[in-house]
Amino acid sequence: MRKAFIAGNWKMNTNLHSAVVLAKEIAEGCADVVHEGGLTVAVCPPALYLSAVSAALSSSPVALGAQNMHFETTGAFTGEISSAMLKDVGCTYVILGHSERRHVFGESGTMINKKVHAAISAGLLPILCVGELAGQREAGETEAVIERQLHEGLSQVGVEKMAAVTIAYEPCWAIGTGETATPQQAQEVHAFIRKTLEGLYDRSLAQEARIQYGGSANPGNAAELLEQPDVDGLLVGGASLKGADFVAIVDAAG
Ligand code: 13P
Image 1 (cartoon, rainbow, N blue to C red):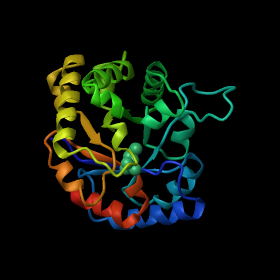
Image 2: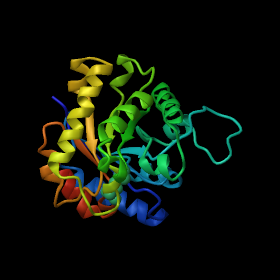
Image 3: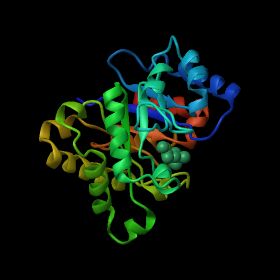
Image 4: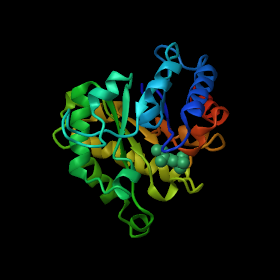
């Protein structure tokens, strides 16, 4: 039985003070819903505030995640952050291959795959994002794009390592636009992702894999998205910046 996983991607928002306030609000609001063996909740603040948010979450079951990392472990990589540094400040999760990393910062499938390997080796749990652009959907290429991104991102990631990985389906046209995929559109692609995982690995791994939906998820649409059989959680952007909204989304999954 797959457990729901709700994560908030704060992107390049908040400041030191508001990040801590938001983390505390979420920790308090989720205290009754998140418990051992139940659903998983994580917040992914900007890297610079990870330590402060980690401290704010110290007695809470809400987990900490980062939004990105470099694949090398140490050395002359100006401006980059390693997996060990993320572990050091209390991260459990790391978002990899987010569409903004792919399309704004030009990250390639090969680079994302190196990051997936580096994260798992360091004991981090990657959230690997996949998703098509609007034009690719219009051209009927959605499945081909998703399949390619999964093949690239998971290249040489063996069955035993896959327990660490969450997949997030984030259609680029639904990110930050207020336009959400319909529950049916989300379900179709999630089922396709599961089928692709079955082809890459096996049926039991595909059945156990957690697949989040991301793209304008909010308290108003969370429940119907989560009702879909292959939607196991949500990766929330804008709505995760308001404590009450994020807690309402967590409640919908609880
Ligand atoms: P929005 O919820 O703001 O559309 O962002 C989704 C997202 O990119 C989460 O990673």
